[in-house]
Length: 128
Image (cartoon, rainbow, N blue to C red; front, side, top):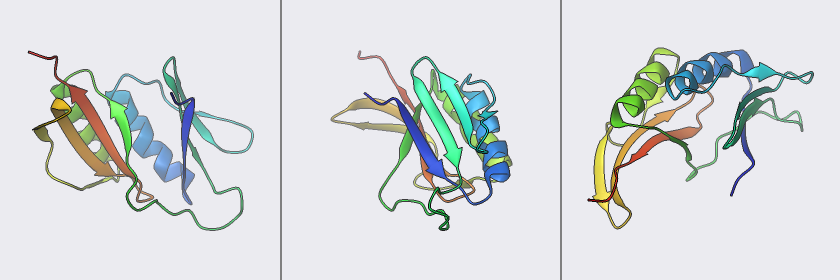
């Protein structure tokens, strides 16, 4: 459904260290910088990017928004969460763990990146 997601950051270098660490835990190669100083993480499923705001105003995170990254297991989601905490991210929401509801059994781990964007690593358990 999506081709890419881009988040704003005033300190792209700090955000790059955070995303290089967290996305590496998900098996994504390190980010690549373009000629405008934006950082792109490219996968077959789509792209994720970090950029200073084009309008020159300070970056801000969206209240009520979450960017979800697919994890291949609960252990991978935990590795993503740990890498994020060690790289300048902050824990938010409930601690990593299983949630069950109308969407099935999920394993979720939440963080805020150094710029305040809310992120989630999600593993969807197979239906029993």
